[in-house]
Amino acid sequence: METPSSPSCGAAPIDSESEADQVTRSERTAVYPGSFDPITLGHDDIVRRSLKLVDRLIVTVAYTATQVKQPLFEVRERVELLERVYADEPRVEVSSFQGLLVDFARSMSAPIIIRGLRAVSDFEYEFQMALMNRSLWPEIEVIFMAPASQYTFLSSSLVREVARLGGRVADFVPPVVLDALIERVGPSVAGE
Ligand code: PNS
Image 1: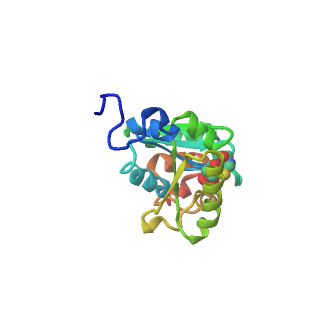
Image 2: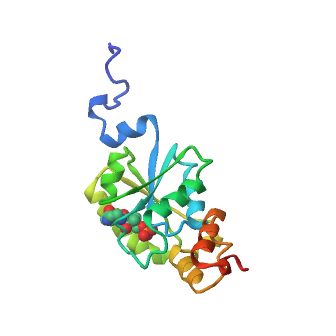
Image 3: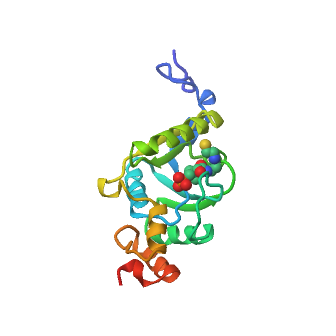
């Protein structure tokens, strides 16, 4: 005869639940890490799609990005831009982190990493990072999301380059980012 405290139908007892199971039981939280220099409409597309899968999404800017190219915005500025883009989205939290991504994810009780995969060319780097992250925290899960097809060629580094060289990037970034780019590099980014 089953007592009220005993597990039913062979389910694992609470005290043997994994750390990840415990944190996902109540609320499913994921981190979406990146350089976000600056956030593009491709990133935004991934954020919106991710919100269909998780309850809470932490969009976080890495101080310790593995592939840093000439930055256009400081980390603090990138965080401010993200905060403005998601000001009306209560399920999105914006932050930054130093050090290892898995340490940050664990500290936020977020056992899911979201990454966008635009093309096969992204795959090798992303796959290496996913497996390294899993070897550092075995309970982490990585979800690769495909963006809308019109953003598959889009990257922050291309936006930075085009903007710096006086090209129009108005179709590729959220309006608050366009305003910041106009201020930083001039009105040509808006096509004016
Ligand atoms: O937008 P990016 O530059 O492609 O993002 C890369 C990022 C920030 C996700 C990656 O560089 C990262 O996770 N940096 C944190 C440091 C870390 O954990 N490095 C080990 C990765 S396996």
